[in-house]
Image 1 (tube, rainbow, N blue to C red):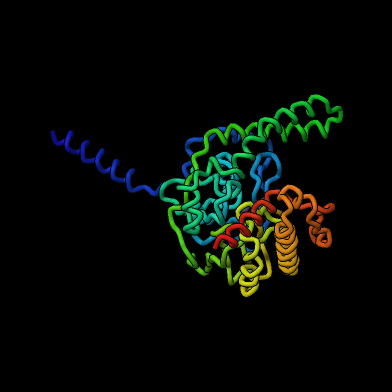
Image 2: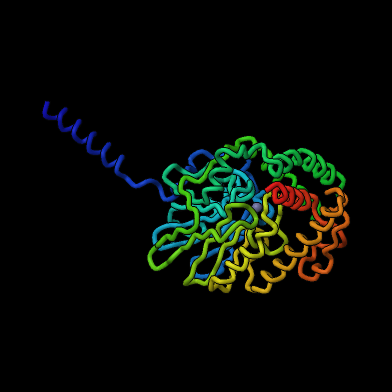
Length: 359
Ligand SMILES: [Zn+2]
C-alpha cells in the first residue's frame, strides 16, 4: 500500500514538474511543420545592422517577398514582420536558431499587407503579436483573403508556375536552368503554403505609441500618421539609432493600393524628427542615406499633383496611368523607365479625390 501511495506521489510530482517545465526554446508552434517549407540552402540572409539587430532578406530559395527584422535581446527575440506565408515564417524561425537560441516572444506587424503579416498563424498563443488597431481590424474583419492585392497575387501563382516550368524545360545553360528550377520550387511551395493560410490578427494593439523595455534596450513602436496604409507603425530603437519602417519607407517606390498619398509626405516629416542613422525597410536593403526620404517625398507630391491634374481634366484612370510623367525622378528611382504610373496608384488617387469631393 505504502509502495502504491509512494508511486502515485512520485507520478504526481513528475507530472507537476512536467507542467511547470518552461516551454521549449522556440515558443512558436513549430511542432507542426507547415506545407511548402522545402528548399535548398538558406532562405534568409541575416544582415547585421547593429549589435543584436538583423535585417532578414530572402535569398530566393523560398518565396518570402518582404523583409523582416530580428531584434535579439538579453532573454528573448522580437521579430518585425513575418513574410508572405506560414511556410516562410516557419523557416524564418528555424533559421533564427543560427543566430540565437533565445525564444521569439514578440512579433510586430508594421502593417496588414499579406507580405508582412501572413506568417502570424504559426506563432503560439503565448506570443504577443503587436500591431496598430487598424491592422487588427483589417486582418480580423477586412476579409483579407478577398483583398484585391492578395487575390491578384495568389491568382497569378499558377500562371507563374506554368511559365517557369516551360522555361526550365527550354533552358540549355546549366546554371540558368538551376536558377529557374529554384524559382519554380519556391513558387510551388508558396502555392502549397497559401492553401493553408489562416489570416491571424495582432493580439496586442496600439493607436499612437507603445514602448517595450528589454534589458538595456528600448523598443519604441510608433504610429506617425497615415501613409502607406491607415495603420503603419515604425519600430524605433533610440539607442541604436535604427528604425524599421515596413513599406512606409522602402529602398525604392512603395505600393500605393491602400495609401494616403497626399498625407504620406507629412507623415515622413514626422519620421525625420526621430534621431536615427539606419533604416531597415520592408523591401530592399538597409540604408543610411536619409536623403532617400526627401526623394520619396518629392515623388509622392509630384505623383499626387500630376494624377490630380488628369482627374480634373476628366481623363480616365487607365489613360492617366499611361500619361502621368514622373521621369524626372528616375535618377533616384530606377524602376521609372518612361512616362506612366502603376494603375493601382492612379486608381487609389482617383478614389481619394472622389472621397474628398464627397465630403
Ligand atoms: Zn505594404
